Image 1 (tube, rainbow over the protein chains, first blue to last red):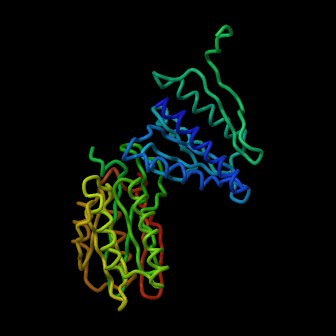
Image 2 (cartoon, each protein chain N blue to C red; image 1 turned 45 degrees about the vertical axis):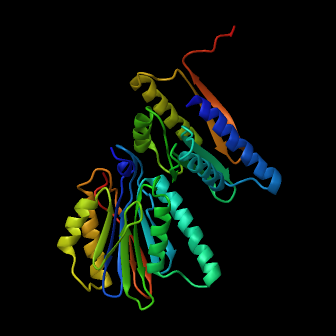
Image 3 (cartoon, rainbow over the protein chains, first blue to last red; image 1 turned 135 degrees about the vertical axis):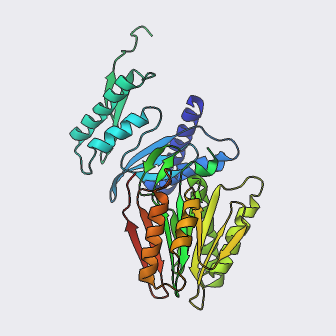
Length: 154
Length: 204
């Protein structure tokens, strides 16, 4: 849900930052994922957030990790994950082509394959995609895959 | 589809001669879609006590965290580990607390008592304990597991034979259930050691 999504992810973002201010060190990916799950689980039986989360992070000692967090607060560490109607196609694509220790170029290639699948198979496919990368140099926007350019006058 | 069948699970515990074994499947699904094939359903409370949690994965995770918390507090206060019978009562009480808004889980508790006698028990989602002398089952593959275990169980099995029996019973049962499978996790616990094995079954 769009409203929940913005509100919830900003809430998590601000709390992760607060931890860093208070304690002087950043939260590990696992800790942040467990915190997110805790928030979703607490709200689940009162006023549930309709938000699915894929949390990716890089820790110096552990390396990169990805956490799948359902809207009903199911937490699992995974190598590859996807949500939504496109997930059926993406997961199949990743099951076929993913192997551990892929380079960035190979990974982008796999992402492009997934985007191609979504564009061709999904009736309600979104037109534009953004690819972000998280590694030892931080999180950054890597590329856009646009089929509908934003209106210059808007 | 019932909420207990949302994630899919299969759990079984069996008693042997001064030992017990507890096994689970490894699939984490969201209805018909498989999300992961390495999901841990069985957790160690202490060296002689294991709990497996079937049913809704989010409630299994929450319940496990609450139980670990209570056991750690118990360890600090009493300076010893909880007996399996006591732990089973704790699980039952925690579940009944939520009688009118329950955790959608069915736990399987297996442990060795002080005199090295194996103890197994299961409860329903609101904490009704069912003690058994031979085996207990839980999860979406529960009905198949009852059949397989009833056919294959013999009293007073040694650890090696117990491992074989339980593995075969689990793999045969999850093959009949589309919501559980993708291999198995099995723990054989004797008074001297804990053996953990991963089973390879039909990966589908």
